[in-house]
Length: 319
Image (cartoon, rainbow, N blue to C red; front, side, top):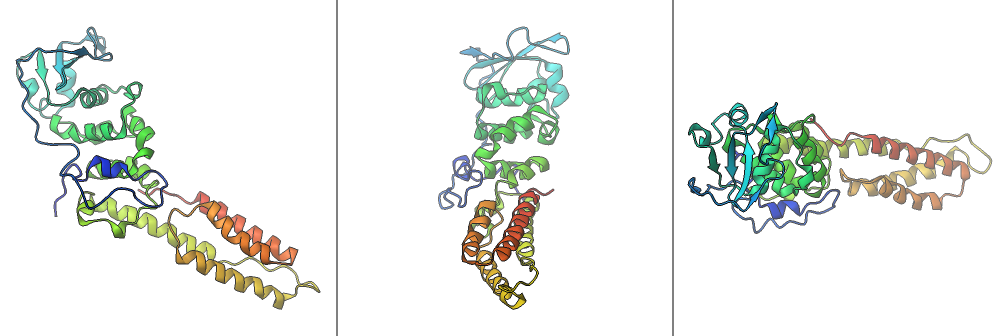
């Protein structure tokens, strides 16, 4: 089975799964054909219409001490001043063959918001001052191959675009994960997966599953499974016993062990990879209130505290 370079799931549907949500709010029943890379309309290269000029890539824009020597006009008529040599250096296909001519001004079929992100990535500049939304960022990433750009070369933890996306990613982690999986952006996918612990993979439609690189989908499944298994291991260890007292001997303390088994069984019945520390504490607070022996209470609280700490420190992303 082959997988497209960009997801076939609509941006709006994917944006509906926010960070730490318990249920995805997108609908899998009505999925638009594509959210980003469509067959482009061929712009009229002779059109000189300009409605605005880029504030970053303005006249006189310099790179490595050299002033820009050509212009790019977006589909919505915004003018960008760039360097032919830099674009040729970055692109493996002459910026979609547009640089193979001697024209000093070219027109592309992308809107200015998308082109702005692409150019910022090429020049290694953060686009955060323009505050692009996560959908616009992901649409731009999906356009990289069209212009001979490898997303992996421009989206890594040490580069500006990675952090631009990272800042917006919690607003739509599923969209970020899907795009990351199709462009082999492992570090970004790890960050996104930490916000997808509540995603029930078993309920995903075939169309949605096919939109994700299968290797990355398995990693997400393994992450969720490993966390649930780790949670089970934590709950399998009951509170320690305290020294026997006249009011609470070893036989009496078995009541706490039985109650612990009951409460842990209840929690494991609906165990989730995104279980919060607060949920764990609230569940055992009920058991705490039923215990009369203060020494038993202390043993219970000590064990619950240990579980909460270990669970909170458990790694939520995987490579």
